[in-house]
Image (tube, rainbow over all chains, first blue to last red; front, side, top):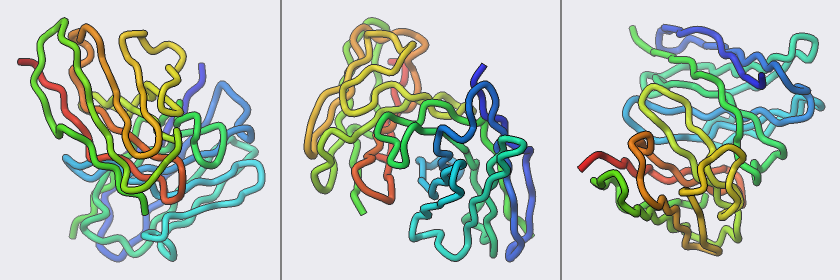
Length: 121
Length: 107
């Protein structure tokens, strides 16, 4: 079945970096964009950006420019989100989700299970 | 950035009720609005895309409408499994933005 499976929970210190993976299965990895969306505890959803797994092109929300890097490894159908210079307010659940085009005009129809990232000293 | 404002932020309803959730955009989004349902501890689930198109597998009691700046999600005959938080999302321009959510609780 079509699914996105993310890596496990992480605990990081302020100033460190975290890399979350998102492994796709059940569909052609390069045919869909991968978006990253985060959700702080008890809060709403925040879009971070997307990667085109076919070309490697990326589009980041300005808020995260300079701190986020999205990459992919086509050989293992996996996308990655690297967030650096972590702050306490980066504590959140990070989701990957796929869409049929870059703007998700048809919605983000498959989501990963989420990866909890906790920033704590 | 386009701000998406949902109302109400929470509501109480009973099984069988008709529920409407409103989402207002700070500028026109055309029909580029999606709706998601999220249950506690779970990832969001796509319900409606392009304002009014029902995602495959989603029950027909869910419907969406609207264009421009005002959008509505309607649930006819609320079911026990529909108690959740609902989010609108605009995909007209980046950054893609979500509404603050509407929590539907049991009356």
